[in-house]
Length: 72
Image 1 (cartoon, one colour):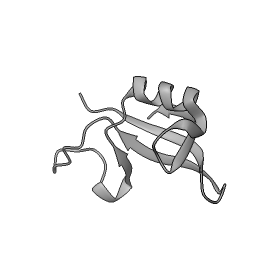
Image 2 (spheres, one colour):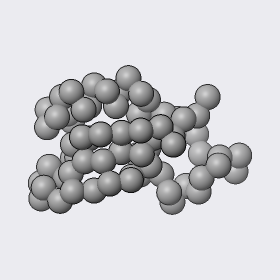
Image 3 (cartoon, helix red, strand yellow):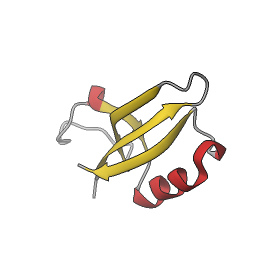
Image 4 (cartoon, helix red, strand yellow):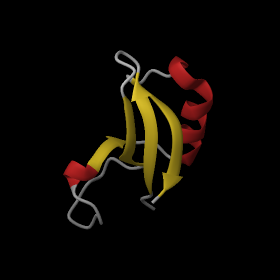
């Protein structure tokens, strides 16, 4: 089942803070999605991945750091 999460965080290279970026756990966009493809910031993150990313901070492989998230 597809889930959407709103994430807050910052970019590692600039430190610029962001909020409300939408991520989802599946990379299977189709016309049945409740959001447009342009609304999705990042695909493939589930709740466990997000918890791990918050705990890892800057040690993740992503170009950004997730500081908080919530299901939307």
